[in-house]
Image (cartoon, rainbow, N blue to C red; front, side, top):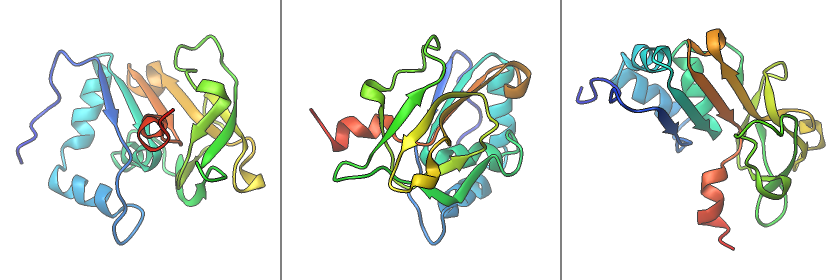
Length: 168
């Protein structure tokens, strides 16, 4: 393998959503087969106070690495925005958290995972393509012991993709 560890001076690691192959986890599984040490690298990064930001199905990568409890990320119960631009409406629960950066209370969401409803939450879905998604975490935030001494952000939507797909 050519990936040996995460650069020691890095403070934040952004893991974007994975493309899907034959299954929702195909490329994630392939990545972990290629880099079986990834879980320990990510845990070490968190132990050093790092912040891991995940988007879409990449949230599942942390579960597959053993950094989240099994069942935290459900890829079989997808969340989708509505309308032409696939925007889901969200309500900010923790406005003083600097990660509550969702503009206009909308979040671009396509095939987002369902996150465990008991997670500490920054924003929750209020309106999506499926009314039963209301109340699900849109952005969850773990820190301290729950995050191996660092911080973990699980974002069911794809905020960084919004500017690419829906430029203003």
